[in-house]
Length: 128
Length: 290
Image (cartoon, rainbow over all chains, first blue to last red; front, side):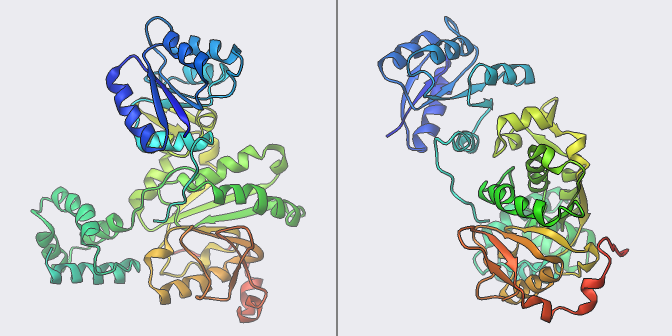
């Protein structure tokens, strides 16, 4: 089973995200800031990281930079999930090594579409 | 919903749009028509049916539109767009190298996600299409849907379903809570109101026809009729793209499926014999007034 690390300082958002990501067939671990997320990544690299931007201690963008310089840190697919919806933020995130970008609020359809986009989930063809 | 009301709506939809609802689609009618009834100040479906029977043509149009509008997303199913980029366009680039023009028809263009996805795919091809005349005609039954398609304005939810984030940044501009596709892409698509049950020969002939997830609503006879008429609007070396749950197999021999390319069809050579000779002589851009 693939693992997804959900990084968000809001326990409510983590809970919602956990439910969605688990329904997509992932084992979920949680972290509430970038530093905690790095601890998890040092132990074992997850296949996927759903990453908030604004968090205390270490924000998502700083975390991403550190992750990508770690050994094996280029492997996880990183999907930002943030209230920052400006083009400048999106461009900065993608330039910093993110694979996809979700603008909050999000739902299962969006997470699934983005996970499909980066190859974490297989596509199902829809009929009607 | 009572049986006579359901039967009445079923018959009305069949006549007006070709939509062929099976006997168990009450929930679909209720979920789509109840909001419409309320908007019209009516208490429920029985009152709506009563009003329809009284002959309110504006209301009939709204009912047909509400029942035939489908949710859609950018690059829906992805595979057809990969086929478009990797199979269809390379062939067309060769076959039309002389006249450098390509005509594409989205026969169920809905709110625009499909034609704009094709437009983005073509843009991504970059220099290969420099100097080419590209026409994408998007048609839909519903005027309301066409207005939305024309505006190119989508909610934050809509732009996150199927659209890669790089495409959002590259081809859209934020406008408050919504996103609008840029004018250059909007200009690549022409939007027209069209009922597939009616004559569409005035649209001219096409190199590629996308007709996805619309024929599933029609009965067999109507499907055959539409396939045969589509065959007359497609170039002999053109491509037809159908939805994942659709096929021509067992319905018509005017098209044949392509091996290993699910959803892709090409006109059969035999089609030429069945086709009135006058068609091939018709000017390509002939667009009759309606």
